[in-house]
Image 1 (cartoon, rainbow, N blue to C red):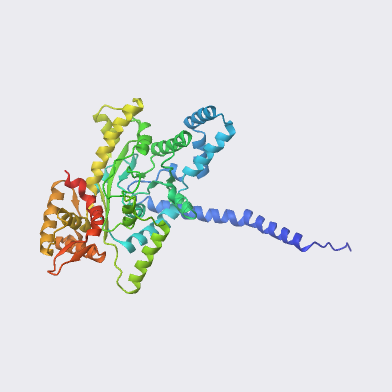
Image 2 (image 1 turned 180 degrees about the vertical axis):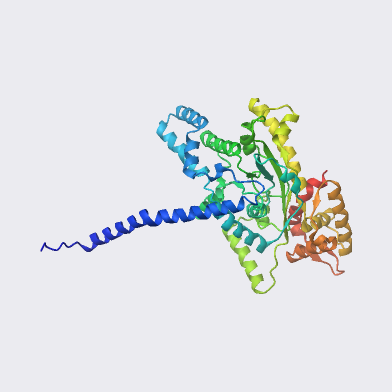
Length: 468
């Protein structure tokens, strides 16, 4: 008989580990991938029967395929050559940078995560915190958008909840692709955001090579019909007012748009408003350079602790109403045809002048779509004479007049339960719960002097309508 072969324990352990890896690689991994693909395909078959705006094949491509296409785009390679020459850098190093930028930007959309996990999570969060309502929407106009069009939702930016709220309310119509700032590039949030179809943007980057890669991705996605959601203000409104639009992403989309091409770009204005913005005090602190600074994490934990204590005592209420209104879709092909324009043929200065005109019109439509909610209406009335104490009857009469003024100016008032008196009660209750109002000995109400900036923040959500 041959002699027995003995192995050290460590070597046997290595061989067993390699055998396990081989089994996983050859048997389990393909099975898991097949199972996941089947789940994704079933979800796509289901959602395509009910979505008004279908998911384009470009969005379903493998992420690596999109990255390779972006890194080999002729405009990107030309910019890389120029960047290497201007900075005296090896081409290989510049190519590595381009690939790194592409990997940073390109999403990894997963329909199963978006429509199963993402929709479930956004719905739970939104409805746990707010009474979520859909404001005015022209379903016939949205249904009339040609199916081959690229649809871009343009919206105001009041809270980081905007991503969750709009994704939840739009999930019955389409899957949105957001441009997300670097704040979300933390594990594991980064992977979740990518799988939801969002792409990351370095908002303050002046790197020409990075900007070219980002521009090419946005133009390609737009040409391929990917439905996108854009915040033209570029960031959260610190004072509650609509901010002047930034033109970066709009320029990327429009500068490569062929008005005579097969695919139109249709912009849908979206207005968002809240009875309470979760970040309101933090945003207001940014406006006061002398205010004491506190770490964002500390502020968040203090906010959570305060609400947990209210919940434990049975005194916690949801943060009022959160409402999204959809405006009239605007065809970019039609807009350019009315002015006999093709932005591709304009010099940069003239192109930006036209884009400013377009962005101004779109933001005006967004402003009209912003729902006037109870807190904003009551805050506006109280701030007209903040030093004066008023009875609830006076406030009610003034709020009813304000509702008529907003509607006369083309704005949209959301009236909960279709009861205007109830809307007044909701607004006053929210302000009282937050101790923004004080009651005099005569039973009258007035604004607490130290909370004037807070009420002004909410009243500013309607300021663009008052100015009309």
